Image 1: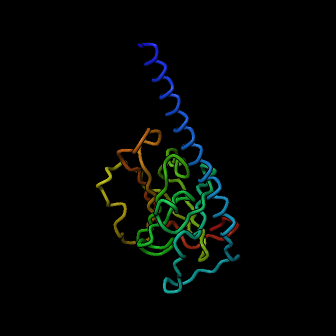
Image 2: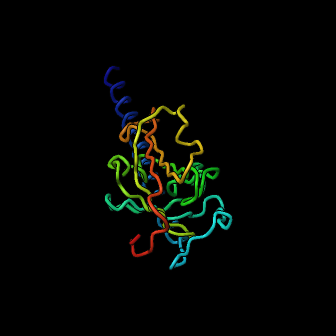
Image 3: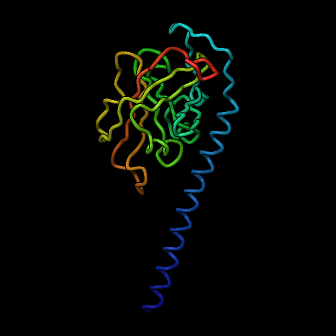
Length: 199
């Protein structure tokens, strides 16, 4: 009887492990192919001229908003419009109610810590972040990183000046629903950056 219970427990644990591996593989698969699809959609005009805030048009929900590059970390990620479950499977999502990249205000982009935004574990103060959209390439510089509770919504609030806030869950390697949030705040460091990467 005792042996039967041990066998049953072994089968249950094995089944649970297979389910977790399957879910993890699905998440990685969806994030990879979501980024591939987002990259195909993104076709900015070049060269790009700056436009007034009044001329900005918000993309439809789920559409590719632009490309986010962190040069020091050799990272390039495509950002989509919206922060729902479906959008965040494709890539980091721009909160629709927040400012557009390059505009005055707080541009908030959220992403999953176990896929697209895992790279943020290595970001540091002074790093450059370039966000390219149909309206231009905008250079931001990181001025702070912080760990906050989920109830702390300061990173989502409107701000003076042109600010970029990247938000993900924390700790990065936590199993299950992570208890905290990791926030990167960067400010616009200059005007439109030319496609060559020169200011």
